[in-house]
Structures are given as C-alpha cells and as structure tokens.
Length: 370
Ligand SMILES: O=P(O)(O)OC[C@H]1O[C@H](O[C@H]2O[C@H](CO)[C@@H](O)[C@H](O)[C@H]2O)[C@H](O)[C@@H](O)[C@@H]1O
Image (cartoon, rainbow, N blue to C red; front, side):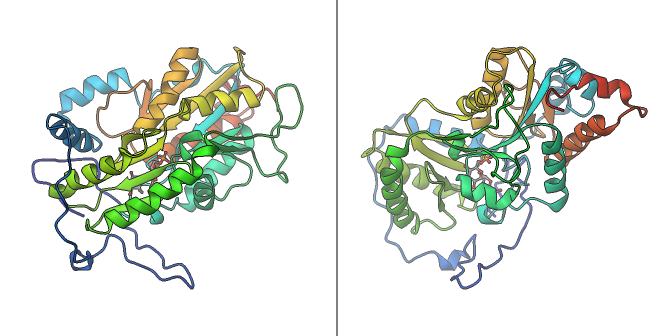
C-alpha cells in the first residue's frame, strides 16, 4: 500500500492474503507495480478546472486524519463511546423493541487492501448470530447482497445490499422473526432494477479503463459499482477520478459519491441506507410506532443517511465506528470492529442475564416478541 508522508490516516489496513478461488485464475491484489499493463499515457480529459483540487481533497478526506488529543476529546464528548456510555445509550430502549442494523466493511470486518479478502472473524459471526437470536438484525451494506451474505453466512438475518437497494428477509427455514402483528414476514425489495444493464455496461467500460492504473480495482455490487483507489499511488488518484467522471458523462442517470478510498457509482434514485432502514422497520410492522428502538452501527459516509433518519425519528441511536473525529449524525461512537464485537456481546449479555447481577440492565431492554 502506498504510504503518504504528511497524510496520516486511520486507514492502516489489516493485511490479509486473498485465497485463490478453487479452479479460478487468481490475480494478486494489489498487483505488483510491474504488473500494471504497458499502457499509453492516459489522455488528458476535459474537466472543470476549478473542480479537481476540490475533488482531490474529497478523495483525501475519505481517509480521515488523526486528531490532536484535545480535538478528539471534544469529539468524544459529543459522540461518547457506546461501550463506556452503554447504560445511557440503551436507557431509552426500556420497554421497546430493539432492531439492529449493522454495516459490513469497517464495522463487522476490518478494512483491508483487497475488498475480496474482507472476511469477518468467527468471533464476530458468533456475536452477530447471538444478537440476532434476541433482536431482528439486518446487515446494510454497499456490497452486493449475495456478496455480503457470502461473508456473513447467517441465514437468520435481513440483508440490504447495494447501499440498501436490494433487500431480502431471513431465509425461510429460520422463521425467527415475525411482524409486530404476529404474521410471518416476507421481505423482499429491489430499487432501481431498470439500471442493472447500465451498471453492467459501465462496469465493463471502467474495468477496461482501470487496467491502465496500477492498483485500481472496479467492484461490481450489482446495483452499484465501487472503484477502489486504496492501492493506487496518490499521484494517480486524479487519473482515477477523471477516468470515472469521463465515463459517467455518458450516463447522467448515475451518481458518483465517495466512500473510504473508493468512488461509488449508483443510480440517481432516492434510495439509500436510510430508506432501507425505514423500509425494514415498516416491513417488521414498526412504522410510526414509538415502542421500537433501532440501533444502527456503521463507519462510512453512506451510513450517515441512516443516522440522519434515526435523528429525524427521534428514536434509537446511531453509532459511528471511527477512531478519529468525523462529522456525523451518529450520537455515539465505537473505535473499531473489535469494539463493535464487544458492544454486541454486551447486548447479548444484558438479554441473557435473567435475575443475575445485571438484572437491572436487563429490565431496560424488553423485547416485544419474546
Ligand atoms: O457499506 P459497506 O458494507 O461498508 O461497504 C462499503 C464499501 O466497502 C468495501 O470497501 C471498503 O472496504 C474494503 C475492504 O476492507 C477496502 O479495501 C476499501 O478501501 C473500502 O472502501 C467494498 O469493497 C465496497 O464495494 C463497498 O462499497
């Protein structure tokens, strides 16, 4: 991974060797520099002269900088640790149905260089499984639904893939959760299916173009695309940005946003992780009800849409996963996936505590369908 002097980030990735899929040709990622194709110099593209600097700053900002202790202290006062302030955070859940929403990358799995290697630990899987035994639980990810399911591998969850555009309820066999009216839920929703051919076309075009930029990688997330620049030399970031924008000029119905060292392309429709959260609450029969307490945990900009929905509802809590101050609509914070796991385990403990020493906390969290 390229290191950028004077640009400390929280993006110290966990090194994981990508397993070669059986029977498939395996290209190492990130590629060694020499493996970049012998490409002609990229053509100069017509771009708004005022914009590139701002865009570059935006790409940099996708990797938050470290903060001075005082700055971090101020931020933590506004966004306390959901572990340290556990009782306060869950105090308002008393007598309410908790519903869990979990982002995947950077929340359940550590950030790694190769997106295909972002596996979650068995301990984390176990924590999520146990949480889902007590509370309806959804994974809300920018990844394609199938892809994120293949990482999480738990049938009993809801999955909202492609930034919430592709939603599926738990596999039939689990039958764990029921709507508030007692009926078994059947949840399935796909926003923007008409964009599938266009997304596929742009995927092919961008994949060909990115072959000229060492370390760049295009990921097909079905309803949206991710163009990764984590392993691209900083001097080449503008080239990535310009290539993507030049392609997108032909597709005015697609939108470009930034994630963590990634450019994300998706249909310009009014659907996001916040809408997915609302959709799932409605599907569970909790729309407009005051006895529901959603908890959303996420680390990225797209999770902000869900945090904002919770703020707007005035119910539940948003928890941002970050070691560094970030502008956020979340109320609480956790530093990294390890703390997320600890938080999930704590939730399971208070549920299973019965009359034990934490009975008091157990009383705070009453699950309507138990
Ligand atoms: O909504 P999420 O589940 O957080 O998905 C957002 C993007 O996550 C993945 O990219 C990020 O994680 C990669 C693996 O750790 C990392 O290499 C990359 O730099 C991060 O941006 C995923 O690959 C993307 O498709 C998602 O959009």
